[in-house]
Length: 362
Image 1 (cartoon, helix red, strand yellow):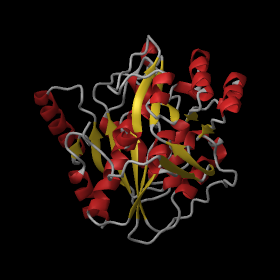
Image 2 (cartoon, rainbow, N blue to C red):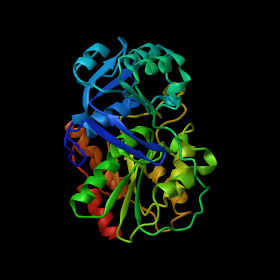
Image 3 (cartoon, one colour):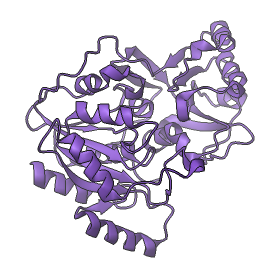
């Protein structure tokens, strides 16, 4: 992995300051727990932490049938304690966000050994008496980052000052967070006044603040997005992490609420060309991934409801599973199809996309 956010010195605690709950100190180093996850698309929490905060990740812990391997040292709880690990972070963001009962023994063992348990799952750690009891014995903390703010209001739709970039996708888990972080990094390197606005559990763990948007009651989704990206100076950029996809029957609601509340000036479409069908719906075969132009058209109709000047500024593609020759042809095809700069954020960087954003929006 080569794409990293702005460098940070190794530290014993990574501060999580969130609108969601009182601030916590996430104690590092971390043991990343993948359980028995089968699809790498559902391992994005662990993968994101390892990509953007590698200095905080000491090892991985997996059940025997786990299909995800991130090449970190394999650790048991006992080995992690000996290595100085201080927190076990659940590295999975599965459909529905439930914690399988098969994981409970591992999580309880880690808590009993004194490791804090950090979870971005929908199911709260407090739902498992065995984990609570283990934490009480050792004094370990149970930290759920998916707790929405208590003071959310419905969206006003009033146009806010400042400039906003939103990453959107043709599917879930196609690189919206990675692309947003890369754009934020590139803008900052150019001297821009910019913030990354996290909308998912992994982004919050990386950035230290944000709102887990898919935990918000539906009536308040757009309002949460407004709160996340408030009025700012005219030259300030907020780069907002997208969620889901408007075309996904399961997750379109959160995508729309985030789109309307963000009021984006610039949109960047994220796409994985290796996908034939939407993530999680492959077996039914009824939901192919949209073409880039169809996804952009659908998105712009809805984005321009709240910001008539919204436009796409680039396309970010994940070409990790494509040969070099096919990759070149694919990028050329997408460039011709959309008329936009197209790049793989990891292999190419996002300078061409940011060039276009700045040319169009100053």
